[in-house]
Structure formats: C-alpha cells, structure tokens
Figure 1 (tube, rainbow, N blue to C red):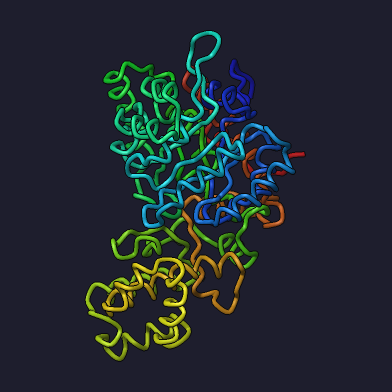
Figure 2: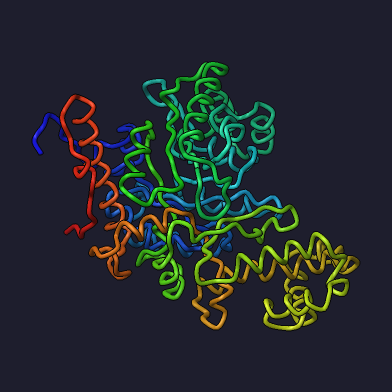
Length: 472
C-alpha cells in the first residue's frame, strides 16, 4: 500500500532514550530474577540493538560478579545499553548494600530497581554516585536508574529528587560527596520510569491504559512541585507486551520505550530449563494464575505464574489457606496433612529439618522465633516449597514438573497464538533478537497503517495483520 507514511522501528519511542542508553531501538529486554535473564541474553539483546538487563535479583553477590564477567567478555568493558537488577530486599539486611557496592565497583551504569515501595538508602546512593557537573554547567549522569512501578504513589518517589535528610545521611557517612548530595537535590532519582501493567511475577494486574495515564499525570504534578522538566523523565511501559499490536498500542500512548519479560523467558537464551520453556510454549492467554510469593508469603503477597501443566498455583494457594487457619502442622486435619506432605514430596518433619538447617546460616533470628511457634515453622516450610518451585523449573527437575513455578503473564499466551504456524513457533527459533525485531517491525507496520487511516486513507481491516518471520 502506498502512502505518505514511512515508519521505521528505530523511530518508535522517545529518541532521547536511544541516545542516552546507546541502543538502536527503544526496547528493553527486562530482567527476570534469579538469572532467568542470563548474561548470554543480555549480550544478545545488546547485539540486536536493544537494552538488556541481567536478572541478578536474588543471586549471591559472587554469582552476580561472575555474570558481570560474562557480559563484559561478550560486549567489552564500558559497553552501553545494558544493566542489572536491584531488587528491594528489606528481609535480607546488608544484601542491597553489597550488590550496590559491586555495581559501583564494576562500573554497572544502569540498574533496574524492582519491588520498591519507597526509596531505600542504597538506590539513592547508586543514583547520586553518578552525578556530576558537566563543562556546560548541566548535571550529567553516569549511573541510570530504571524504576519499575505499578502505582503512581511509588513512581512519585523516583520522579522527585531524593529527600534532603537521606542525602545528608549518605554524605555524612561518606557514601556520596557533598557535591553529589547537592546535585541530587536538583534531579529525579530515576529518569526512566517503567510502568508495569499486568505481568508475570509480582504484579498488581493493572491495565496498561489507566496505569500509563496515571503515571503521566504524576509526572506533571511532581515536576510542577519540584521545578523539574517533564521532558527529563521518560515513562516506558511493560506488562502484556507479547504481540505487535500490544507494542504499537504502548508506543501510540506515548511510551518512551517498551519492556518485554514473559516472552523472553521462552527464548533460547533464557535461564529457564527446556522443560519449562516447553510448558510456556503451550500456554494460552488465560493459562495463568496468582499464587503466593515465596519472599512475602506471610503478608499474602502473590505472583502471577503459569497455570497450564503445573499444580504449583493450586498447591500454593491451598498452603496459604492452611497457614491462615491453622496454628501449626499438627493442628491440620488428616486430609490437610496428607496434602501438605504430598506437595512437599516428603514428611513435614523432614522438610522442617532441611528448612532449619538452612535458616541456621541464613537467618538465625527468624529461626529462633520459629522454633517457639509451630505456625511460623509451617510458614517457613511452605516458603521453602514455593522457593524451590522456581529452582526446579530453572534446573529442569522433571520429577517435580507439576511443582514448577514459572512467572508468566498473559503476554506469553498471546505471543503463542500469534506465532502459531510461523517460523517463530519452534522454540529453537525464539531468540531475543527474533522476538524483538518481529515485535518492533510489526509495531512499525501497524503504526503506519493507523497513520494512513488517521489522515483519511481508506485502509482495509486486513492491512492490520502482521505475520511473524525470521530476520537475517
């Protein structure tokens, strides 16, 4: 179809994003925790012109360091367009500081901050440490925070300058300089805000449209309050982006960039086992469910996981119901005890012994409380099951296939429907490059068709189709 519009994938999104981060496209391959987003995935994402984030959340600092070595070996030291994940970890004292120390020491210039409900000292330290006054007098950044948020009340903390008291404390402790503290009072903590709508893992199941408009309004309010320019804060969109139509819709709303997650978990470069990736490739848009989160089980926090092919969501929910209503394992009914031990794959006593051995080194204070409280014991055992569900999925322990915990949103099923019968249907063709380039090329095509229609051209409905293929 001829017409006045030419739309290239490189033109989608905010051009200041690609200039700032050194990527060809305004597209982020998002971090997937505990190494699902592997160093190899980051390297391939950057080589494809994307921004890639290493899924370092939940990994030991020494494991993260080894991953950084691998990324540097693949891209070269000082390469742009990549970063790593910093997850808020209040239940692990000292962990955030150790990871930020590592990032600063190794020159990791981009961090995706997730699970933050408010600012922590460490994320502010990371942001402020990269501030300097340029030769032109403007404030320059060498450390960039991507704040992943699903609520406006959280976003405003990152859009605003860091609180003065927090900056004073950091400067007094020698964690930042007095000049960095002063500069941090004049700029947002994060210049890139990723709005996370209905997604895999921790999610508020927010619809993308209302979330994005809420973040736009929040940016206006925060900038007016603090005398900032709205042009200095980019808002991207994540969650539910698994087809060109979803990507085009995000850019049409004004997203500075898009971030994909679930669809990359089935990619060749994913840290998920082949058995887990095969389960993902069979999922439909409705084959997801909410299940208790291992890290915040007692608080009732949930994550969105794959439902098809596993019993994890059902078993996790029943464990939560038992925890809410029973004073301990011995207080459970015979049927409940049978269910628990079937899910655990061993007796409760054996599971508690394993849990206790781990907690003695990891958190002896919490163990001491649990030893005196049967209900706490039960919670720790349940948390261990939830944790290992993800571990079994990564390792491909097929004997525990029914207990695989695979974080997954509806985007995965939508992607599967779209690519069925195309060259992207086979798992071996699903690389981050092919996934991203198909989504971006399709979004550019759809944007062009909509532009033609919006300027009075008669564009048939069939023109809004796009079939996935393989790019050279």
